[in-house]
Length: 162
Image (cartoon, rainbow, N blue to C red; front, side, top):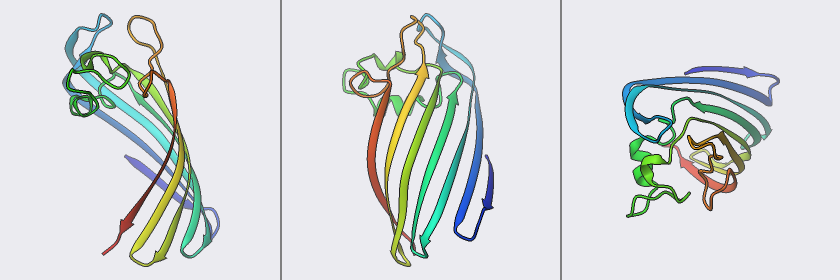
C-alpha cells in the first residue's frame, strides 16, 4: 500500500491510497470454469475527501476502483464459503466454485464522522457499489443479491478508543 495525505486547508483533508497484492500458485478458474493453479494479482486506488464542520463533526466522500485481475481476491475460498448457503450456492444463485471472476469493482460513499466524546466515533454512510465483469460464458457478472450488478447500502458503525 502507498498512502498520500494532504491538508488542502485547515478543514479540508485529502487522502489517496494505492494497494497492490499478489499470491503465487493459487486456485483460480479458466474460461471453462475448471479450477487450476496460477499466480493472482489485485490492485486498486481509493481516495477520500473530508471537511471538518466542527472539531467533533466531519463529512466526506470516498471513491474507489479495485481490480481483481484473476477473480481470486474478492472471492477467495474463505469469502466464498462465508457467502454461500449449505448447498454451496452464493446469493447470486451460482455454485460457489464458479462465483468468482476477474472484474473491476467500484464504490462511491458519502458519510460523516461524529465524535460526541473523545472515546466514541459514530460513522453513518450511504454507499453505491457496482461491478464490471463478464463470466466465461459471456454473460454479465452479477454478484450482488437477486442477480444484480450494483447495490445501494446504508450502514453505520462506531469505534471506541481506549
